[in-house]
Amino acid sequence: MTRTASRTRTLFASGAVLLLALLGCAPPAPETAASGPGTVTRTNCGIDVAVDGPPERVYAAYQPAIEMAHALGISDRLVGTAFLDARVLPEYADQQAGTDYRPSLPGREELLQADPDFVLSGFNGFFARGGADSSVGTRASLRELGVQSWILSPLCPSEDGRTDRSIDPGSVRVDTVYRDLRDLGALFDVEENAERVIGDLERRIAAVEDAVAGASRPSVAIVSPGDDGGFRVAGGIDFGSRIIERAGGTNAFGDLTDKRNLDVGVEELVARDPDVILTDLCCDAELTRQDAESEVRAIKERPALAGVTAVAGDAVHPFLFADRSAGIRAAHSIELVASYLHPDRVESGR
Image (tube, rainbow, N blue to C red):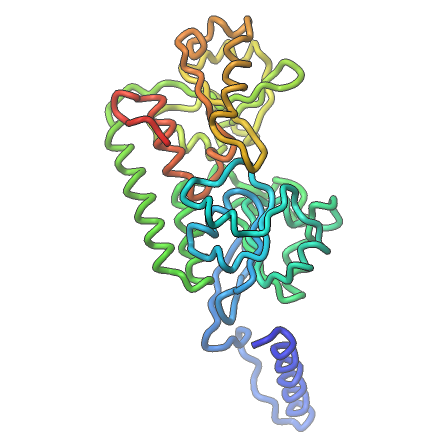
């Protein structure tokens, strides 16, 4: 059914109910809104997302959403993709090459020109009220146009979409990724694909956990050098902590839980003395781990860090911001980090 036909039918039905009411024989109001027999509804960030049929024109923004779309097997439905933090995983390279891609987020007008019926976002900032050019408007404003949306939960926006105040990133775990896969699988009518992806993730992650069981748990810091001489690190509520834990380590900054990303000085990094340091390179669609070697050198060449265990022990490793985002990279990232922390137990990651 087209959006115009749907609206026409709704107006006709509303008019019929009003006429019956005027005649004194209106039926009792239903407790819930009526939906067609083919309607599928799932709840995302407190919003009911309902589709009368599988969405056919999907716009995906940010790495986690783009890779999840490919993993679910709906690449042929993508009418646009935007803002990759790094190259997509090799298994999705061909699919991504066949999509329309832009390196920056579209504004509202450009998004609507693609005529999507569904917008899938990996992070909350894409939906905002009266924000910058990269905002496409609130989810409610898109829904009024017949465009449904989904944020990889629970990275939900505040009321105006601009802040992280209502986000509970500490609750984002691997199970969250599975839940998104199942919900989106139902909405897109690709439930078998979703279960296949989940099964593969579960198997691979369980294999790593079995391999590192009983091993010592080194402290790990995810670090990006700043232009001011300081560093940005991933705090305890970041999904990177979940990756480190599953890989057999602990986040050296795990006790800092105010934000996902924190700025610290060199003194703080020295005091924490992590056993292992992972870089945090971002953001370009062509970035690979090899590109992160520049950050490895920048960290290892800082004289003030010479005595840090990770630097002295040559345990500074290339890692990407894309690798610590909650999405279908979870198994890949856990395997990779485990190979850094426990090379005697886990083979080198891809």
